[in-house]
Amino acid sequence: MATPRRRRVRDVTSQEDLINQLEQGEGVSKRSRQMLDDLKERDKAKASDVHDQPIFSTASEVDRILLDYLQPQPDNPRYLPVIIAKNTEPQTLADLTDCVVCEKDILENRLDKSNTRFSTVEKELDAIRELAETLKHNDLVHPITVWRANMSNYPIISGHRRYYAIRYLYGGMVKVKVKVYLKKPENVSVLRHIENFSRADLTPPDTLSSYINAVTELESILGSGALKSKRADTICSHLGISRAQHYRLDKLTEFREQTLPLLEKGVVTNISAFYAEINKAEESGGKAEVIDYLKGIDSKGRFVKFMPVSKPQGRGRTKKFITMPKVDVGQTDAIKRLLKEDVTKLDIGIDWEDVDYNDATQLEKVLKQLMLTLAKK
Image (cartoon, rainbow, N blue to C red; front, side, top):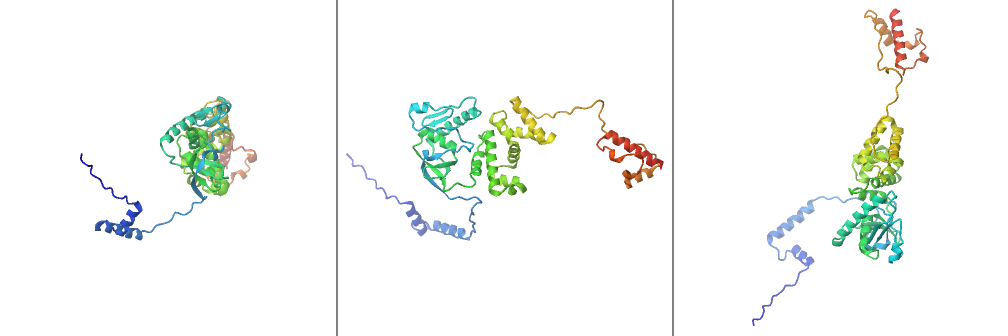
């Protein structure tokens, strides 16, 4: 029987050793060493700038934290009314009602169907299940972002959907990679909006709520004066949105008491179309007309386009033009005097104090009387 030939395996050289050899020129061709030297010289000649600190800067670090220590925040558009049970006993979980249950292998919408968020929550839970399937096979690419209130309380800034998906997969007793701000950032709502608004599936009411919170926070930090002079530029720059998006959301924010409930109830589902009709109403009759239009949508329970109400007219045809009296071509002095003098000071039988200049019919009579009087003189 032939003895198998032994294969000699060379010791694996560590990456650091390889780099040292490369820098020292060991085991590298003369041409490669020359290329390396050329690259070094080129890099030395390059002038580089260092990215300065942004306006809002809070120290942060990446750490692994127990999921149970992370706290979803009710003022975040991604927040779901999840009740965390004291224990995961079947009976305890079964007793939870009028909430969302999110524990290992359990993700249920137990809200009453009359709840305005019922259908929105249903869609959100479907998206969370899809994300959970992805996380079974892939790493958490974007860590959940939190800030440290204390060693067992980390309020979530962004990443609520990731939080729910991980809890659904593994429960709360699992550590996850998170980005931890060492204290609460002063621009929490802005950070949330930047992440949430970049997602195309954010619902219309959540989009508007996120925008309102972010702009309110900017006003408190920068001062309302900073947003008055260059409001669009400032908001678009900080929130990372287009001017068109800003104008639409800003107009809906102006009438938030009426617009937000209509979006939350699902009466209106398209922000762009909603903005266009509000603009028409405002151009037609100002803010009062907008509020009447929004109240009309609410009473009908469905989105309708703005239709301007035609104003009732009196009897007969409404006068549209003032007819000038005919003046003989030889009576040009009358026109000259009309243009050069303050005719309201002439005593020609007209009580100028009582003239209603908004009444076309009355104004025409006065003009005729004036021209005829001037032509005679």
